[in-house]
Length: 396
Image (cartoon, rainbow, N blue to C red; front, side, top):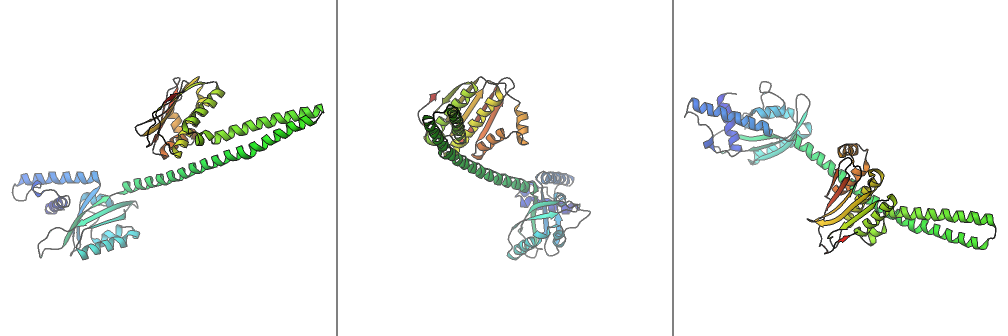
């Protein structure tokens, strides 16, 4: 490219980016000083284009001559020595599925003498593919001057990949939300069936067994009947316990505070843990999805404490502050390496931690885990919430 062509390229870029002409070097007014300023401006332009992945071009329409900046060549994966651009030859690098759209866009811009914007895919000589956006506009020309356009081309491949990943993540989130909602509905159904059907059947069977005991005088029969009553009683207790774990009625009937209180009492009593539960100002209404997610986080955290922490005491807190509902639970157990646990969770080895994180994230919240070996663990879940706080706090 000659010095004159390079200078014209800089002017084209400046016009398309609305750079004041007074900032450009002037030809014929400073000799070597102007030439040095021009070279510096060109280097600055090239570096800027490389950093932003934006090339520039100029098109002499009647002669179909196109001038590209170096970054334009870089985007196409070719060199100026290999290729002399024109509209016809450019189309050879355009993805076949995008050629027609690009031709129609250019034709409309020429017919209506309007700026254009077109997104298309470029296939490089090495077979790799880039997604680009080209923009073109018309400069102010005097009558009789050749028709020309100038513009830019931007490599947006990484942006498109990020958008695709974001869309895929959004779809996974929606699918996960549907799965969790379906799971909760199934839990509610199973808990009701266990309580209403199996629980009532076991109760009826126990009543009939007691009735048989009163009617028989055979000692062996009495022994067998008493054993049957014991089995039925244990089965009834297990059914009730399973029903409560699936969906405690406290959560629907009495609210989140009562459900967590019941959870702590049940779990800590069975594991011989002491515990405290402090409830700060809560909103008058908490959406069902937040109540369920918060309770499931508490349930999973307590399960981990009982199974792994070897703790003797648990502190739990439920509070509302900064338009967020926060549940936190801390133990004095031996703790764990959170980085290793997170790695295992990412690989599917620890679904409990992943489940808590996903439940919080689905509602726009977050989960924090602070744990140090031999110094205990604190889990805190934050859920965005809007509501009118109640002037109430309790400590249990």
